[in-house]
Image (cartoon, rainbow, N blue to C red; front, side):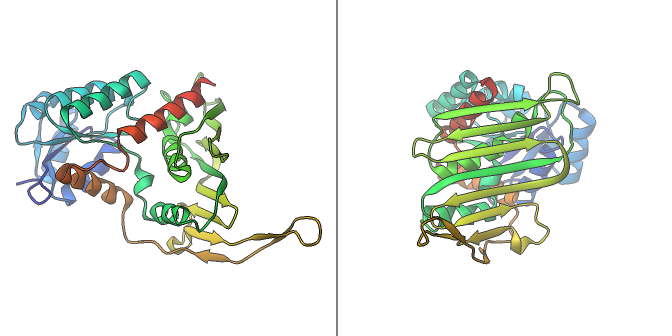
Amino acid sequence: MAGKGNGSSVAVIGCGHWGKNLVRNFSALGALAAVVDPRAEVAAKFAKEYGVDALSLDEVLASDDISAVVIAVPAELHAKIALDAIAAGKDVYVEKPVALTMEDASAIADAASAADRILMVGHLLQYHPAFEALLRSVRAGDLGTIQYAYSNRVSTGIFRTEENALWSLAPHDFSLMLALFGEAPDHVEGTGAGWVTPGIEDEYRVNMTFPSGGRAHIFASWLHPFKEQRLVVVGDKAMAVFEDTHPDKAQKLRLYRHSIDRNSGKPVPVKAEAEILPYDMAAEPLRQECQHFLDCCTSRANPRTDAKEALAVLQAMIMAGNS
C-alpha cells in the first residue's frame, strides 16, 4: 500500500515542470498514492509509471485513504485548493509562493491552524544540506554578527510570460535571507525592468534592511549571459559563500576568515585562504524536503517552512513588488 512506510498517503496535484519531481520523490519515499492533473493523458502517464491511481481533485478530497496533498499548480490556484484540502481533513504541502495575497495566505494559515492540519510551503533551499550547514555555522556564531548578505539567482531563460522574475525566481532567496537574519525585514524596496514580454520584468533587484541593523540584497534575472546561484554572507568575524552552481560539489560552501588590520591608522584587509565547509553532498534537497513533510505529518510537529515563515516571506515579496 502506498505510504504505509511513512504513515501518510500522498496525492500530488499537478504533474507539470516541477510537479513531476515531487511525484518522483514521494514515490521513492513510499508515500505516493495518487496523481492529479487536468490533462488526462499526463495523469495517466504518471499513474502508470509509478503504479498509483490517476484521480480527480474531488476524488482525492473525498478519499479516506489519502491523508495529505501536495499542491504543484499555478500560484493563483493555491488558495482554493489548499482551503478545500484542509476542509477535507488533509495535511497540505503547497509549492511557493503559498498564495499571491496576504489575505489568501492568512486564510490558509488560519484554516490549517483551526483544523490542526500540517501546512508546509516548498521553500526548497531551506532543505539544501549546504544551506543547512551554513545556517548552523551562522547560528553558532562562526561568522559573528551578520552585517549584510546578497544573493544572485540568474540565468538565460526560462522566459515566463505570466509572472515576473521576482515571483518566479526570488521566493527562495527571501526565505534564505529571513532564516539567516532570524527576523523579518523592517524595510523592503524593489525595482525591475522587462524587455522580452510587455509588462513582465525580466530582472528584479531588491534591497532589505532588518531591525538588528543587517542588510540584504537580491538580484534575480532570466535575461543573463550565464547561470549563477550564489549566496554571500558577510559577518564581522568571517564571510561565507554558498554557490549552488559551482561544478565541484565540495566547493559549493566556503568560509573566508578575512580580517581587518587597523594598527596603521587606516583599515587594511588581511585576506585568508578559503576553507571548505563540509556538508552532506549525497543528499538531494527535494528528497529531504519531501521526507520532512512526511515526518511532520507523522509527528505533528511544525515544518521548518511553516505558515509563519511563508507569511513573512510573502509579506516581504509584496513589499518589494509594491515599492
